[in-house]
Image (cartoon, rainbow, N blue to C red):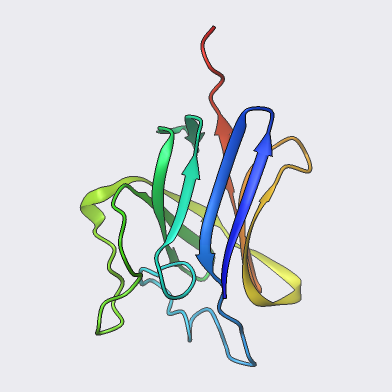
Length: 155
């Protein structure tokens, strides 16, 4: 199923569009989603991330705009890439990601967090519960959090 998750705070608006695969009793990371290979971060279409404000992500500038979101799950960290190219689908006929690394605007590593509960359906969310905005992704017993720092407009 397709889903869109939005985050609005004052004049900030963030949006992620993605498809939500389910676990269905399968081993997810390291099996269904192989380690050390680019993943379309969901199912079907490429996942998109849109921001109406400039952001800093681990000290790297991300200008406002729309990006595709790609990840490389590993056993203790995930590589997260924000890519400037819009793709009409997430994978090609051979089920290989359509991601083109030449369009990566930024690439970061974030640690994984093992969680007690099992997340049945892949879930992307925004967490601002501690006034420290994060883009989270969780599935099975794994969660990651990408720190998002909003650059204040110059007066």
